[in-house]
Length: 71
Image (cartoon, rainbow, N blue to C red; front, side, top):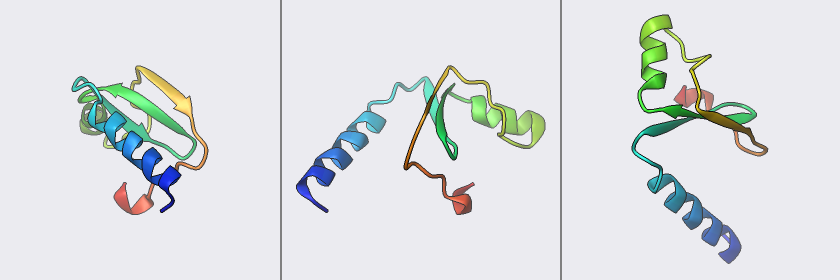
């Protein structure tokens, strides 16, 4: 890993570690959803899937991919 990549990786870890306890994120193929804590589990409990979780915010991404084995 280059020094630049290492700095970025450390910054990403800090951002995720500092995420407010009241939210959770969901990674999609082309965007990231920011949800209220528990929204993903609630959607799964109600419908059996997490395809359309109510979101607080979202943003488009490039070069961020979900791992299908993790889903």
